[in-house]
Length: 89
Image 1 (cartoon, rainbow, N blue to C red):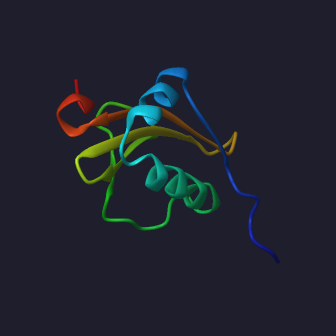
Image 2 (cartoon, helix red, strand yellow):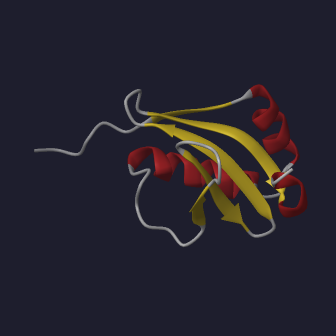
């Protein structure tokens, strides 16, 4: 039995715009490629989002990446990339 098929991932239009301005863009791109292979691996920087079903956030220093995981569609959708102060508004 081989590895399960990786999840696909996409960024919303606003998340892509935020990614272009983010100083952590390279680390975020590397992380999303790893997360697509194993989205539920233990990570101290991942926390579930309160009030958002299947929503999580990944911490990159002072930046936060908020995303949804669709297990049936095998999709990770990044919907927000923001500095810590602006990520939870």
